[in-house]
Image 1 (cartoon, chains in turn brown, purple):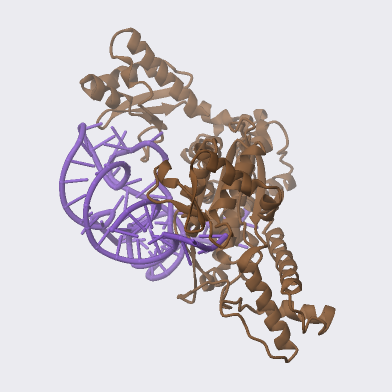
Image 2 (cartoon, rainbow, N blue to C red):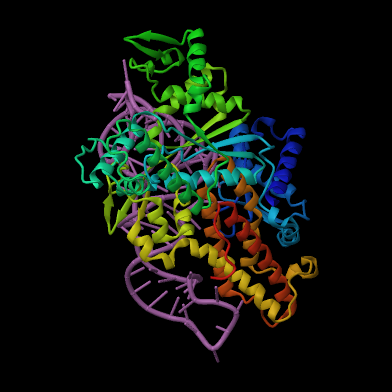
Length: 553
RNA sequence: GGGCGGGUAGCUCAGCUGGAUAGAGUGUUGGCCUCCGAAGCCAAAGGUCGCGGGUUCGAAUCCCGCCUCGCCUACCA
């Protein structure tokens, strides 16, 4: 907010110097206005003098002095300016500017932090997309939380967001699922059965088989086809998955079945179209996608000699459908094990005439789960995985969400179950939520003491908010909208988490040092106005990434 | 062999388009509730930012090489 004004002032001084012939326009857009790290370096600093010195071969401190002198004339905005270090121009903002933010933020209310930078662009966020072969695992959990947070951030910044879950309930994996279920079914009936070598060994299969016995008795004992077993398993597992997602507060606009791509002829159409462009050929009984013509190091099979497509073909067709459905931007959240598909899909999309730059793939690394210091290996096939449900049972929804959002997608995420459960009282999520609850308590207290908090902030003498901690808090609040915007456009929810943690730290520190409801009524009133805007930002920030906003804890 | 992502305090991790003296949590040590919520605060301690070069006023950040860990590299998804 204020930073933009400072940037404008610097730009004006820069342009003025250009017209006066002090320097050329070559340095335009290369300098920045940033927040200095250390105290005493002003509220903002610009490196414009150093950039210009490099371009013009002049002394940076001399140029800095010119800027310092001219910026100082913006005396409504700027209190004073200093030249420091190798040529930084440190800018000290007039406190009234910070104090003036309070009514602005209150006026924006729940809308503070939201923006329209998205310009109404239609964005599809595809995430989870787990085939119904078992309960959601920890890795899916990370993806679900990450995708949901990204979708929420995009929605908050003026994008039209559509959430989609892509799945496939056909194919080999599902057949194995059906066979596994049949084996358990026969087993439970005390009959001879052979469990598939690569079958799904989880207890949930036994439960599904048991439900089948309850519904149909042993009527399926001699059933040849695997279909009834597979269907029963799929139904039960999908119900389980969607229950887990609902539990985490995650909802999809659509579940897209891969099969529909075949039924509607999109698979064949893509092959034909690529073939028409000379990008598809037959060899060894298989159909190949000539990705070498698109700069890749080898061609890829898209239809096996068995006649079955490889995963690449439907993936390409699916992305083409997304474009045809009118989305401007496709965001895919994938686990890093799917990285191999990305170049092929992008190549396919491009070959079909769509701009691959409109596809952004967020690859998240795995979650390494530990329990009592020992690593737990996860595999859906084997029985020893830990499900999202189990995690939710142990830790709770908010901490799970928070932990999964705390790391950037690129990083592997270590989740120590024992630690998370044992120390749930010290979870960082509470640190932030406690800040909000504490602010609410202050407002309740104020009401009890008969101090009105619902009157316009303009009635408070905001100039009394002059303590360094108060000005710093206001400064932090002012960056909230830009932070949200950056998190959304970079698809990086973790940065908002760090922002909230930082702000909570500032608040707790302030709270311990300064009394809000003190003996001076005017001061209390001013501080309560600050409390209100802080509460608003915590509430908006927490809600924006799907965390609950507790008024008491 | 090739591609992608990690390697920053004992541990888990931030560090935005290069910026000034390297950050947080946790753990360790020592303080703070007759006072608005102690799920909190304050202080101390803890570092060759994997290694070596290069680019420049300036590098954890950009480039090259190497080491190391994870994922991928399939006519599995």
